[in-house]
Image (cartoon, rainbow, N blue to C red; front, side):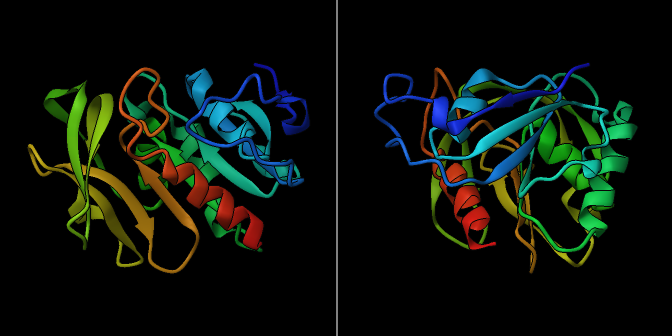
Length: 212
């Protein structure tokens, strides 16, 4: 139940790995909603030059000054996180529009805030070798996953579209807004250990921040 701030300027080359060159701090602040965040998500943001403000899952971050929103992973049933969904819904309705990225539970919470529903998978996705495809392309990626719930794609409103789908069972693996800079992934692009095929999503998010 505390707010923790991380400064990109204090993140050194020794902390970074070879996968993403260390970027200079860009002065952008990202609020990270902590539903059980993995440390490598924070590292992936810091080494791309953004400051991170980590807040509890039920904290109303809309009262803070920030440039973008990050919805982190976490365990459990997203239908029990109504406080987080309400806060995300406020964010989506606010002006000016700010970028948003979600991972795993974050994908489900963003989807719920956008009006979609969630269902429990029969077996869940729990491995380092789950294949996903970027919708509208022939691009496939191997991803790390550990979740038991999924978004019902057909409950998304017309303003949203599926971003990735699972090649094994056809379930949703991410969403994106058609016009606003909001997107999420059900898998773990920051996988540590695991495949890093999709770590480029962090670059996409930071690029959106720097356009604002």
